[in-house]
Length: 171
Image 1 (cartoon, rainbow, N blue to C red):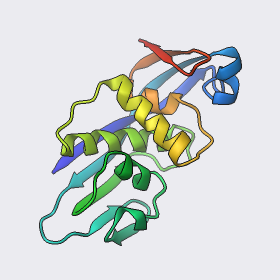
Image 2: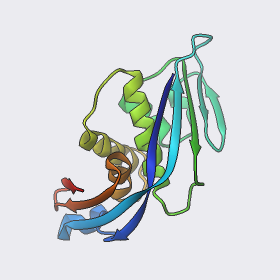
Image 3: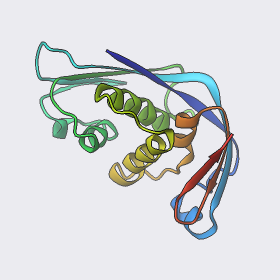
Image 4: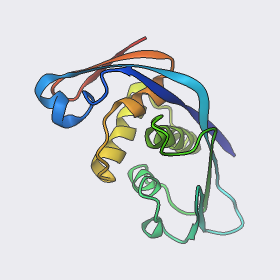
C-alpha cells in the first residue's frame, strides 16, 4: 500500500503567465506558496482480482485502463504503462474548484504514488513536467504549469518560465 500527498497552493503574483499562449511569447514568472492543506492518494495492488478501482467524487470499477472515465487517471496510467489489479483512492482537505490548484495537486500526488508502486525514483522537476504533460497535452485541459510545480516543489516558490516552456524553480 502506498500513501502519497501533495500540497495545495495560493498564487501571490504572475497568474496567467504560466499559460503556453503567454509564456511562449513573453516568458513567464509566478510567485506562489503552498499551504498546509493536502490532497492524499492511496494506491494499492490488491491480489483478489484484476479490476481497476478508482474512488474520487465518483467510483469506478473497470477491467482495463481504456474504460476509465477519469480524464487524468486514464492518461497517467497509460503514460506510466500501468494496468491490471489496482486501487486508487483520493481524499482532500479542501474541495475541488476552490482555485487552489486541485487538478495539478491531484496529478502530482497520483504520479508520486504510481512511481512508488513501480519502485521508480523520479526527480522533482521531472515529476512536475510529467504532471504538466498529462494534464495539458494528454487530457487537453487549458491550464498553466504552476499548479503542478507548486504541488511538486512545495513551499514558497518562484517559477521563471522561458519561451520554450523550460521552468527554473527557486525557493
